[in-house]
Amino acid sequence: MTSNNTKNIIFLLVLSGLPQSVAASSKTKLIIKPTVCMVKRLGDICQMTVKVSWQSDQLIDACLFQNDLQLTCWQNVSVINTDININLDQDMLFTLKNDQQIFANQNVKINTALPNKYRRRLRANWSFF
Image (cartoon, rainbow, N blue to C red; front, side, top):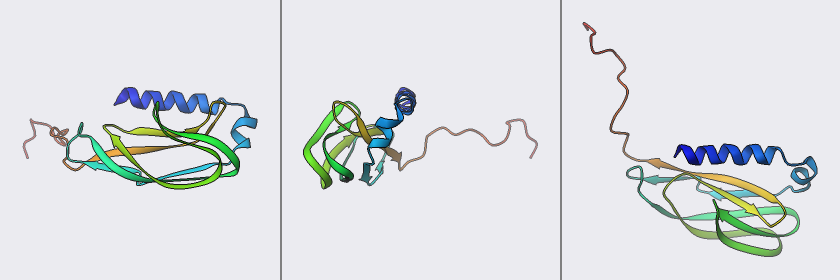
């Protein structure tokens, strides 16, 4: 899970290093709901249907990726509202992009219903109280 966080940080650093003209030229908003998937235990696969909507100020060709997996593509559109079935086993980054540029991205997190088995003790073992 830490390698995924590292990938996300590197991705954001690369994205922040893009020229302002590329980042500012696209005002595309990507919304994926729900943004959290509940599983019983860490490592379980979450299957859910998400509502994907995005809107751009111009007609674009774009594909939606789940990390490196291409989910679906659209051509010459500016507004999309659709449902997509996804499977997650860890936090995932969804990216709307084409060959030349990244338009928008959003994370979907996994939460567990059961707490971790081991927790840090709040007091020392040697306490008299």
